[in-house]
Structure formats: structure tokens, C-alpha cells
Image (cartoon, rainbow, N blue to C red; front, side, top):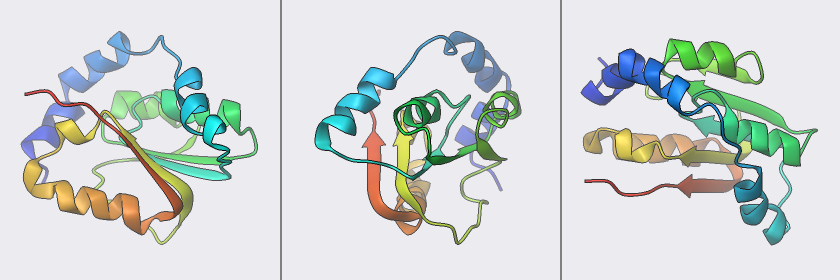
Length: 140
């Protein structure tokens, strides 16, 4: 059963978010985090990838990298999956044995049901072979 937060992002709000947030780049942001720390990535998993802008930045910085995104909103997923390997659905329903050098979440944790945060963190941890990037902010 999906949480209220997941249902919210699956619906109209998630569709509208795609339109509002489709024209920015995170290349400089990820360059500061990864390149300036001499981190190289051959594979990356993003939970809550939306249309893939963060994975686009990783792919620009590391063109050889394998990228995979998980996204619950169908509209965002249709754009994401045209650029990256992707899965559409709840992170809590996604099962895989695959490991990635980098697992990440950017701006997604604040939208999770607090009762499910340990499961979310476990997904990041269980699928990372090297690095975990959590890039969040707080909003009451």
C-alpha cells in the first residue's frame, strides 16, 4: 500500500512538478561534489530521479557511467527512461540485487513518510558499493 506522499507525487502535483522543474542543470553542483573531491563514478542510482536532471549531470561528468533512476510519477518516468535506464514505481516496491558505485537522493527525503525513512535509507545503503550522496533541505 502506498503512502499518502507517494500517492501525492504519482498524481497531478507530480505531473505539474515536471513542467516547473525541467529547465535547470546540476552539472556545476555535481562537479563541486564529485570532481573537486577526485571521485569518479562508473555507475549511479538515483531514488526519486524525476526527469533525470541529476543523472544527466552525472552522465555529462562521467560519460562512460551506467545510470539508473527510480521514479514514481509516470509523466516524469517517460522522460527519464528515454535518457537513462529506469524503473517506475515506489522505491519501497523496487527489488534488485544490483550494486552501484554511487546511490543518491536529492530533494526527495523531505517528501517521504517519516515512518518509512529507515527503509529509504536501507535502499540507499544496500545498493551502494562505494558512495552515498544525500542532498536535502528542510521544509516544515
